[in-house]
Image 1 (cartoon, each protein chain N blue to C red):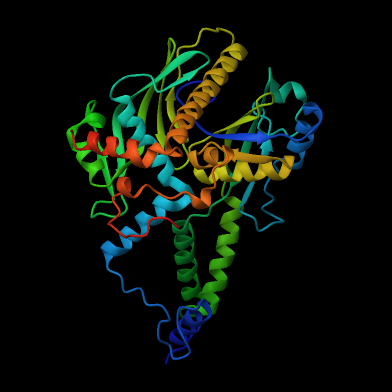
Image 2 (cartoon, each protein chain N blue to C red):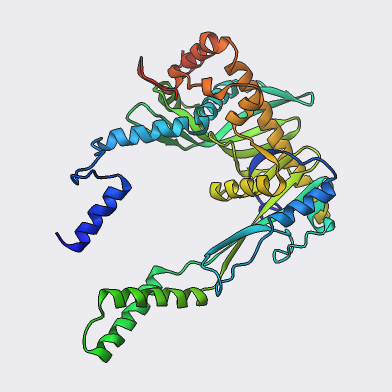
Length: 207
Length: 207
């Protein structure tokens, strides 16, 4: 795991944490954004995501001993997804078409084929194993620095949005633009340096 | 007209791609090169990525002399670019150039490309602070840390090793913030356009 050993890959944020005792708001916030497993029988959702404990990724109880180490809060973002492969649907549909032709002595109509495809997809969805991935999140409760340990920008954005919602906290990314804004720069007035970006004379480079 | 063609036309109309006469509302008659350049310009401006590119390019210039670029906690921070470098441009015929090789970042070829209007978009850096050294790949838009090599750990117990890794990761993040801070101070100062950019351009031309 990237956090535990090997090379380190992370995106950086600064969080303005909620007021009050971190022991209370941390557990409350994680509970608010906790992972809810996929229910393939009852729901049409093919993806579920939320916070889990880092060492027991099936647990969403978040006892303080499990989610803190020194001044750090440590937890994980879990993403479960189920994806039915198109090739599997196609193969099953071919078998169904052959059986339909043999039984009815005619090829299936377009609507019959569409209904069968949907039925097959649903059946395969229930049989497809759910893929689980977890991503570490570390948050220094003293300095407010949060690191999302993944290379996927999509997951990073998802984690940032979840933190903002669950903790009602404001996140500032560690990008140069965000740091400039934090330092008081007016981003709307900031444009590329024409001589460096190779803009032809008179070309409009800023938004 | 077949039902399928009719449905296709209706969908195009609903999307706003076609008018009541069936003709395209906004035909994209740009050629391939123009589309590429427009996309490159969009990438340059998106999230003020140009700031990050100017930062990495400025760092490359400043690091060639091996002089310290910032100071953190009373100790110098110096930077060396190592190995792979990705350059991106928005106004010329070349939108991306990848340079590989231990000496590639400071090569005359890379400087010529920079002088032609390309900027550093991604780079592998070695950052030294006191007796410690980190290596990381950084991207211009988010300044995310990728595949970072942290200094050797001293602790032996699992929890202590984890805390040490977290400390070293946070330290790297603080060093990056210090480098960005140095750059922003120069970039937003009066000397940027008058002094710094002309010097940078002279360095690119090998003068």
